[in-house]
Amino acid sequence: MLAALWAALRVYAVGVAVTMVQLLRRLRGGFRPPELPLQADRVAIVTGATRGVGLSTACQLARLGMRVIVAGNDEHRGHEVVARIQEESGPESAGVMLDPSGNTKDGFERHVGVNFLGHFLLTSLLLPALRASGHQGRKSRVITVCSSTHWVGQADVARLLGQSPAPCALAAYAGSKLALALFSLRLQRLLSALGDPVTANIVDPGVVDTALFAHAGWGTRAVQRFLGWLLFKTPDEGAWTSVYAAASPKLEGIGGRYLRDEAEAEVLGAARDLELQGHLWAESCRLTGAAWVAVGE
Image 1 (tube, one colour):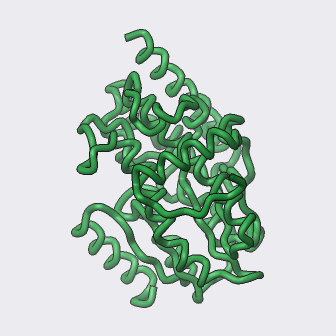
Image 2 (spheres, rainbow, N blue to C red; image 1 turned 60 degrees about the horizontal axis):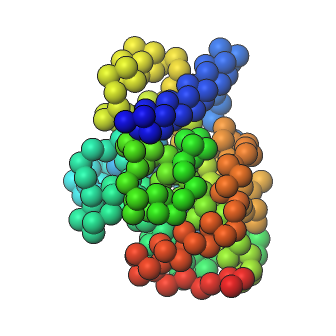
């Protein structure tokens, strides 16, 4: 009980800190979208694109002229999103939080399976296509959506993969985001070592007014309902860092960065622990059957 309370308080403390920073920025003039060039010759695959930040990311990338592939776990919503993008941009153009519904059909804790292992496996399957699509001067990009809550994730592989139960859903969510940070930084090491024309970066959208809070406590949902317009980012504002990471010429050839508000920020020190990265990577390969090339081992 005390462990669950302590874990929840740590996550809420991070959330309050981020919302206060967002409030100050809004009072000082608000958020401004990044200025990016049209990129009609690029393809983007956006996971979780049926709602929230993923939906806004897909729409904004389509407006830049990219061909957007919508990936989500709701086929009907996916078709609706495609129709919306086509209506806005012309015919050429995923995550869970505090989910109490148990494990995925593969038996993984839902935060681990949906937020982390699904992306881990998908990236491994897409890597051949990413390598073939990139070249010097125009590299392919892997963008991993993290969260400031990764700062309070427990740096233990068994806990990160749900093999050791988290004290509460908040702790499981924070752990899944730390796992994503560990994955992305190790992925960049792998890509650099092999000389692949692919980069990997991490983005933090901030605290965004989306349906991710549907399973949060009544206090959090009350704050979202009555003060979300002031404290939280809109989905479009939350998507700007992802769009910046995917399309900005300033990030061409640059990987291994943690980005927040379209600028570089600090990642938890434990996320750069090479031994922890390696252990998580190996165990994730075992659980998903992903075939990655080992580096430095």
